[in-house]
Image 1 (cartoon, helix red, strand yellow):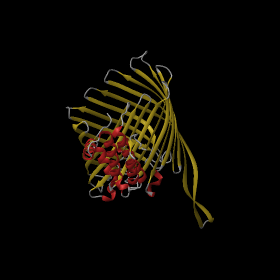
Image 2 (image 1 turned 90 degrees about the vertical axis):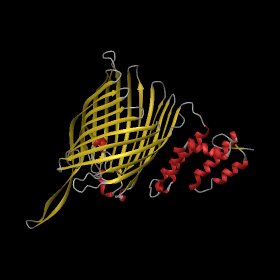
Image 3 (image 1 turned 60 degrees about the vertical axis):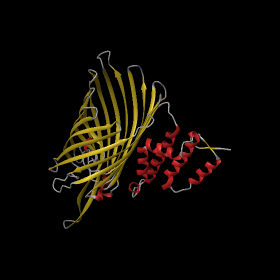
Image 4 (image 1 turned 135 degrees about the vertical axis):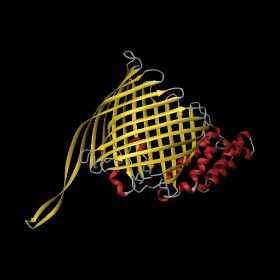
Length: 492
């Protein structure tokens, strides 16, 4: 009589009892148990030697072994609050490795374990114009990506951890975590449904500088997002979509609880191929509503926009859209008044809180010029909109210009260049708690050398400049970093 393991291979009773006994070992030896069982299963199929099986497995899947060992090492697990998520990630790696030992996929399935080592020098960690704090920062980043594409399903999962080690400011040592997932499933040839989600635990002061121009402190921020949507093909030229998205951001330090926010939004739109009127042109209509809540502040936003996308040639394209936003802000205003007790000699200071409402109609516009050549690609994006998000304590009027260019120089060498400008404004007592008036600029040239497709070295220099007009402060920072990355695609 035989038993079957989860892979479908037959195992004699003696080996089944051995496997059962090994399951009682502690979790530190779980990886070794797994390799033992896997090697026995493989020996039943092809009868190779125990040593040759282990050597071939380790040689072929070395990056995955490296990720497994790193996730199990005390430097990663010590003082980590999210240990259950860490255990789940270890289990996922083990399960995927088990599938890789004897499974074949008819669809496009790929697993990409990776690990990178980054060394950077930062001459102003906190963007302080007076007391600059410079340091060397080492970042170890193990990661895992999984993609699976079938006729109906398009699935993508990814996760990585940044283990930050500061040479002189060891109190800033952190383990930041990033997890993302998205999936789309075609119910019919015309109807599709989708879902997405992410979890981030980050701590770097410049975590959002490149995408918003905003700077925060080094306190840990926990951000959760998820969303659902559906798309439908009405005709060969007309498509539509509807979506619901949710985001929540919380700061672990009680001093910054007022930065916490909760947001949800409902959006829908249509796209129409206008090639019959103008070759290579599509028109879009988007509408939406979102709600943002801070402590003592709630903002409702309604938006609508029209846009066009035009492809001039095989390499050049442009997209533009414009519209408006209606904002309604409900908040409480606190004042202090003198109330007479025994006039005219004795008065009492009384705190009075009154609800107030502000309304505003604002405009938005975005445009992107894109180039996609054989060796060179790039985008220039200009925008003006009103945003609400973590760290802003309300709605921000943001004007932005972002440029990114990449070029393949030789087979091994490639170069990148990026630059951005952001101007963020918010008025106190209107759609924000504090007055904000800041300009931010970043410039970053970079270069990459590829030893192979899955083994490469990156290096870059970054210059950051920010001017706080309201508080009359001006700050700048220089950063240089080098990063070595190893990855190992599986099932390709």
